[in-house]
Length: 197
Image 1 (tube, helix red, strand yellow):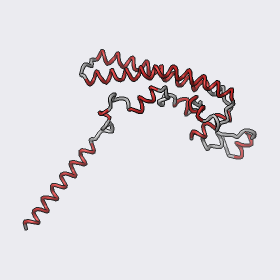
Image 2 (cartoon, one colour; image 1 turned 30 degrees about the vertical axis):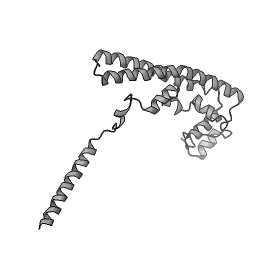
Image 3 (cartoon, helix red, strand yellow; image 1 turned 45 degrees about the vertical axis):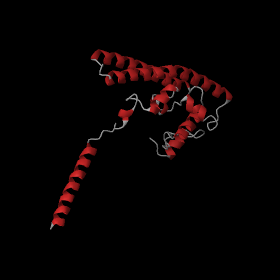
Image 4 (cartoon, helix red, strand yellow; image 1 turned 90 degrees about the horizontal axis):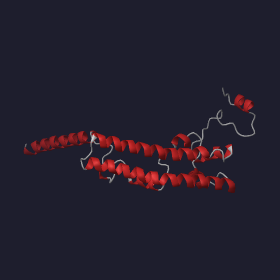
């Protein structure tokens, strides 16, 4: 009888622990662990990307709409058969972009650090918050402009075939035959053959 009571009590305790564990996981933040970051809003990878003038996802509007980025073009110069003149022109765009992006990236890190410190030290006020966010927004806008404007310049240097190949190699190419008429094919016949609108 004593053993039966012990088993029942043990099961009850186990059920309570499981219930507590499930409830605890339900409320666990997706940010858990990030509280250990030096700057809470930036990961180590974010900081590294900003310090080296990397794109940081700021040029997706161009990249994902068929305007290649200079850094990736240079990485893929052999695969997309860039000429010496194209490489030189793209290196110039990339160099200018990087020279403008690095100081802005460093400034953004510094501003995010100031924001983080103001919250950590409990010195934040509405006025300080507004000023910091205004400055962060300005730098972020300028940084995004630097990256997007570099993408804006590359299509004039490339052939349509190179742009298509770039997008294919980057994994963006559409398999829609109506949207990708190969060079040398009559567009009217091609569309008719593929039942395109």
